[in-house]
Every structure is written in C-alpha cells, then in structure tokens.
Image 1 (tube, rainbow, N blue to C red):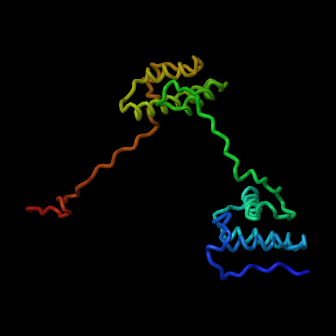
Image 2 (image 1 turned 120 degrees about the horizontal axis):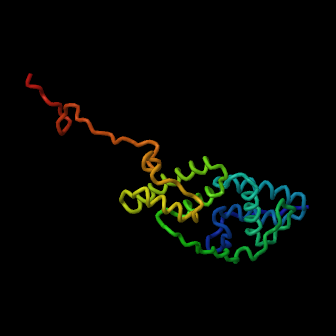
Image 3 (image 1 turned 90 degrees about the vertical axis):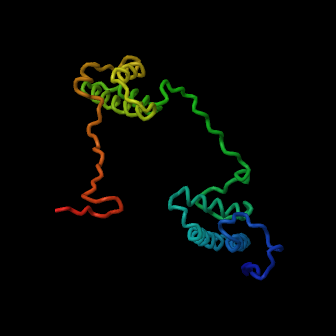
Length: 217
C-alpha cells in the first residue's frame, strides 16, 4: 500500500493554501494533510502521535497536562478541517468551536458599603462572625481592625480614630463583632505589630559631591 507523497516545497506563496493555524507553520499543516491521506488506520494513528510530539516542540510554551495535550489534538483536527479520522485520546471537537462565542461574564453587582475596605474585608468579617471560640474571634477582630485602619489611611490620606473602625466593624458584621473601644485605645490594639523605622541618610563627614570635609585641626 503506497503512502501519499508530501507536496513539493518549491511553490509560490500565491499558490499555497491558506495557513489554518499560523503558530504551527506550513510544514505542520502539510504533515497533517499527509497523515490524513494515509489509508492504514494504525499507521495513521502512529504518525498522528508523532506529529503531536512535534507540535509540542514547536510550541514549548504549552505546558504538560491533559488540557494542553487536548489542545494539541484539537489543533490537529482543526488543521485537517475536522476530517482527520484517527483514534485519539480525546473526542474530535465540533466545527462550531471556531465560531462559538465565549460566554458573557456576569458583572459584579455586589455593592460595597465602604469602598476603601474592599470586598475581601467584608468576606473576612463574615468568616470572623462564624468563629465560635471567643478568644479566637477577638484576635480576628483585632486583626481586622488593623487592616481596616491601614486601608482607611491609604484611601483617605489621613489617620482615622479607632472609634470609627470599631463602629465600622460592628456595622459590617451586623453587630456580631464587638470590641471595647477603651481597651483598643489603652492597648493600641489597632496599631501595627511592628513599625519600620525610616532610614536616615548619613553624611559621614562628606560634603555635596562626595568630597570629605577637611578638618582644621
């Protein structure tokens, strides 16, 4: 049984068929059509697996994994015009895959009570309300207070009083999280656990321009 011959490389661009998937190049497209025309099913399957490995080398950005391997097989079927008949590890994609529009993403309709805290703070507060241990819930509330005070300062460019943060925690938790304001102030509970001291520039006896001062002594 004779195998189909590969087309001659010496041909003008105007006479060449259009590239289906440009990232693989014209030679891969020729190999797909060559394998597609092989009559022996087993040999067609063997050549197809070899071609998939070649396509991996051509596209090293594709990672190993089932979804990436399936993409390679899908691409081979697409290049063949969905006419390749081979026993592949994945089902042949339908031709509609080329014209199918992606599903529309739903817009986030959740309205934030305070935008400067963000949705994540609201989620953390919700999780904190579900903590049953009073000591752990208190620690979580203190941690939230530190975060919220930091976010408030970054957003509004000003230092906020602890009472405002306590009120916001109580409001956003529907009264489920509460902490004594006086204790917060007395123990500085909403202050960061550590502060980075600004590095002071030292002249080390140098003038501008890097020259060291000369001593009169």
